[in-house]
Image (tube, rainbow, N blue to C red; front, side):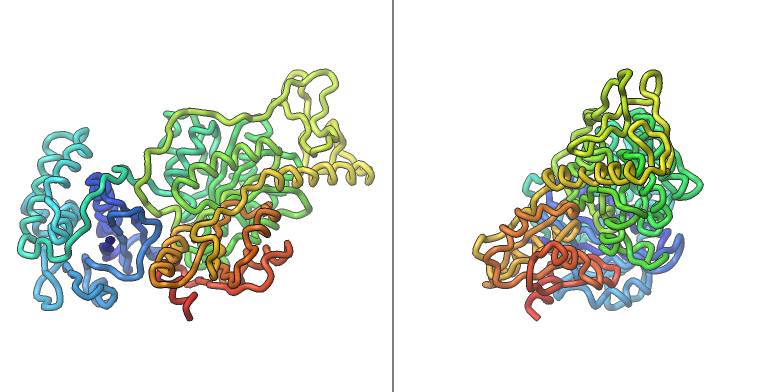
Length: 553
């Protein structure tokens, strides 16, 4: 059983604060949670909403419709009321509406806590009572959360919670919520997972120019800087950010830059510099719709081929695309290790949906466990760009015996500039030999669902959750479906993919763009033959309902 609560209003009204609080409290109560956001590119005004889905089984994505709508404005009520399921409840922050349960949340916050700022606490308490839950769970959570802010703050928030429960008491249990099942009691977002993974993996320098939705990873690293000893620099632009990371990598420091598609466009020359200097630069790209500024606060999977081909010239790279919060943590670390193992850029492709997605999972490991930087000691015969069979040259921290000339031009084994065309051929071939090693270590796609399914949904990155839920729905309704998810999209584990695709009578590639970029990449590799596509590019994330409709149409 699962339900969806949608809190909607203007930017600046505390929609995100209320949604975060509700998600955390429900997880604390032992319910499975998946929280997603939809917001406009405005500091004030507009229409934003925050969905908190709760259930008695693990949840992986959002839903199209809501069971409970909390409308903080007339516009929210008018625009979203039709998306409320039959038998659902609509709470409205106001008066004189016959089509909603009218609660004066702001006034209740003033009466109970002395400030309308705490209206989000009142709203969350009202939602809990409508779902039939005891408000004391919220009161206990608030007491723990605000303990450091002092007794007075705790008492005011608890008073607001009890006031909210009182307002909604007449409708208590009108939408019966699922029973708690002892689910993990901590919610984590994709952005938090990527930041924590980078910090624990030993990143010592992070640079970025703020750009939604990539900023959230950078913000986490800034907050963790003191604990993990990280230098965090907000650069003047994305060009400076990638070049700073290149400089840090040259000096032997694990480094990372976070951005979104528009910022990555400015970084293309710096990415090429990392390819020439064979630097382990790691780039987190949180995708959003383009071209140009596009829909800056929405979600998309439009940058796959751009990430693969960005940067002039030819050089190898690895591209990872996690599908869950746990995978974000695992693959951020893997991207860092891969970059250092092969001395080449590695890219983590996420998006607004996955950056903002909050789900409860077992606590992620906060232990500091730095990756192997794969450094060597330099001797008298040290050659930074020595020709090797696997394309990976010895890399030492510059200084003393490890003298390295650093320049964007072609160079010989010692790093000295050259226009010897034979040396260029040798160095180019050496660099590209790394692709063979990257391909040998590429993650194979993971299958979910019956082995003999008639329909195989092929997906990558953040479409994991919606596709998994779609597979469950299709099979529950008598269809026959399975899923093949790619968490690494370059190099593709071609042999494993070919084997996994065998026997499927119908293949549907699911991705968040208009031109089926991953499907075209598979075809380039001779895979998967004839296939259909399920595409979404309206800026909203996939849901199981959307995929099922498209598969059955």
